[in-house]
Amino acid sequence: MLDTKPLLIAREFPPLKRADLQVLQVNLGYLCNLSCTHCHVNAGPKRTELMDKATVDMVLEVIRCRNVKTLDLTGGAPEMNPHFRYLVSAARKLGVEVIDRCNLTILNEPDFEDLAQFLANEKVTVAASLPCYTQDNVDKQRGKGVFDGSIEGLFKLNKLGYGKPGTELSLDLVYNPGGASLPPAQASLQQDYKKRLMDDWGIEFNELHTITNMPISRFGSMLISKGEFHNYMQLLIDNYQSQNLKTVMCRTTVSVDYLGNLYDCDFNQMLEMHIEKDQQPRHISDLLESDLKGDDIVVAGHCFGCTAGQGSSCGGAL
Image 1 (cartoon, rainbow, N blue to C red):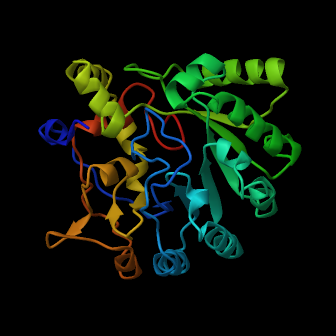
Image 2 (image 1 turned 30 degrees about the vertical axis):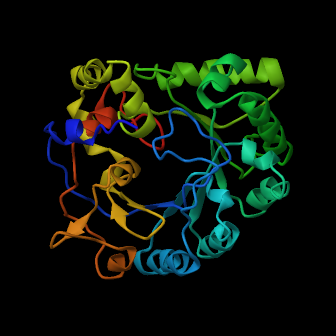
């Protein structure tokens, strides 16, 4: 795979500092039942990296100590970590909102048939990747049969009350472009999604979050191999909006990898751009001593992806 990191760190980006810590985004490992072309963590069925129980317990200790508002669980398929349900249940008992970044197809896998019911019982917010409402586009980006599996997963969630008015079960969908372009306007695309999914399948959901593809990992490598990397970077730079600096997710979020190392965001994690102290990577245990407020955020060229156009974050447009 072609590495975009040298090209990204060579580009300057405006300085940023951390605000109050509100969100812990925890990567439970790179094991996944899918291998999507846009996946910025290079997850797949052959990956073996998984967070261990001791690190999971440290996550819970930090939540207690730092009054964290949201635990955002990602992967890979975070549900494939053997400690996923333990962590979710313990965090919910602490009164924390838990977000499961679910690929939907995992709900249909053997040994995971009761997963949707577990998520509903714990009132977990489901943020589900569905990069289009048509089969051809989804299967092209995520693999043959993934669209049908995603629709089946959505049926299961809707049946339990997810995405339905008047319930406490939030179901948000996540869109990212299929190529080297910026996402369309989030509000209008959400209307299109709601209409098509209801008309075609009778499926309901709460919100659509649009996310810009980052020029890193598999997507970045593809850009280089096609000779499109510099054009894509210029697209991001040309659409840079300084007002988005106020609300980028890295100001209030800390990303934790499966070993417990800290990063300013999930993308920095994949680029191995650690949060450091005395030139040493900081560990989640360090959050017991400091919430990092006021610290400099590690930035590079890929940060233009979060600040271009309407802005981008794991919660959609800024």
